[in-house]
Structures are given as C-alpha cells and as structure tokens.
Length: 315
Image (tube, rainbow, N blue to C red; front, side, top):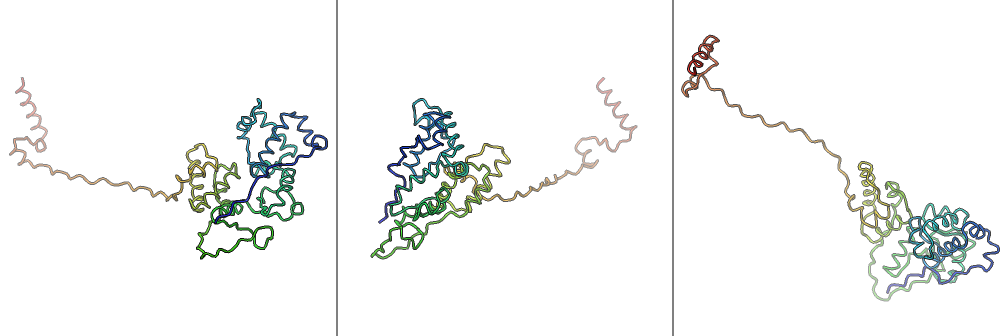
C-alpha cells in the first residue's frame, strides 16, 4: 500500500508582534512603498507558507497574475517595484531568486522550521535552504534532482529513498506477501549537460523540475534530451527564430521535434546527362533518291546557277 506523501506546507506562520517596532527592513519597506508594499510582501510570504512551506516559485512574469489575485487596485508595476525593493533590502534572498527563481529568506525558513521540526519527515531542497545545520538539527537536505526523484518514488512505491541510518524517518515494515520486483525509478543526472547546450538559459528552477519530471516518468531518455537541446540550439542559430523558455521546451514537448541526431549532409553529385544518339547524315545518293538536292556537293558556281534558275521560275 502506497504511503501518503509527507505534508509540504504549513497551516499557520507566526509573525512577531514587534514586527513594526524592531524590524528595520520592514520599516524601510513601509517608508518606500507604504502599506501597499507591505501587503505584497505579506501576500507572497503566505503563498510560500501555504505551498512548499519555505519558498515560493515566482518570477517577474507573474506580476500580472499576482496583482489580479490580490485585487484592491494594485497594478502589476506596483508588484514589480515592491518585490524588487524587497530583494534589494534582503526581505527576500537576491541570490536564490536570481539563480532559481524562488522567493525565500532566513526569516521565512525560521518560521517554517518552528512549525515542522516536530514532524516525522523533515526534508528540504538543499539548493534553496539558507539556515545553518545547528539552527535546524534533524533536517534532511537533498539536492533538487534527488528531492524530486524521492518524492516521485514515494508516490509510486510507497517508499522514500531517504539516507540510511537517520532516526528522523519512520521505518518501513517488510511486507509478508512475496516481494515483487520493483521497477527501478530513474534519476536525472545530465541536467547540467542539457542546460549548457540549451540556448535560452532562463528559469533554471522550472526547467530542472520539468527535466526531472520527464526523466522520472520514463517519457524520454536523458541522452535524447541533451541531443534535442543541441539540435534546437543549432536551429535557432541558423533560423533566428524566437526561442522557447527551457521549461516550455520540455513541458510542451517541443523537444520531440529535435530528437533525431543530425546526419552530416553529403554533397549531391552532379549527374551527367546521357549522351543523345546522333542520327547519321544521309549520303548524296540517298538524298537524290528521296528527291532532295544535296547542296553540300555543289561548287560555288553551281550553287549560284541553281539559285538564279530557281529565282527565274518565280518571275
């Protein structure tokens, strides 16, 4: 029986009652963008807590949807400016946003850890985590591709591939029924090769997630995706076409059009047309027999005489 996947987000997040008295970053945000700016920051934090728990995948392309969901006359330009300022003053981590497209901070992660530290399973993506080990003892940190693989394994087999010997994870009971040979779940190992080959290197976090999902599902092999990225790079270089975002290239299966390995073009040989059969020229006797006059055998005087006589017949 497959186990239920561990809960990701949290149901509540504790905000300090002195947030408006002792937090200089909040003071700066209120001074620069007022309560509207604080509302945007608060909204995005709540999206993080309610989703993954400690980060929120977000990019500037999401400004319009964020303003629409918030309502209250907040425009997408206001959202962009407020988030940019939050990144500038450290309310959100600039480095993780630039590399992975996630909104998070040490403060967000501390509040998250306070809630989840009592859970049996406490796993986070190491690439996104900012707290030191001494601040969150017992936490398991996994690289992004391994985290996605383990989560998928938990869905498919009821088991999670957690590091051995860690007492924070519940033990799996052996089934009394005869064990079935489980299908090996693939892991993504060549994303860096794909990323290096792909010509439009934006939204890496979304691209890596889409890449891992494809590999884990068994839809396509990693070698084929790397070849597709190389072929697509050659195509846009030659054609100048507008490039797909890497996550759309994968999620919308555009890669399927670029899977085949290009064979080197062999120059075509110019075929020599076949020689035409030449009809032999008739001899003088044949021409005379058919009533033709052979001008080739006449001298200049004979030809001139013939022409005069022929012309006289028409006078």
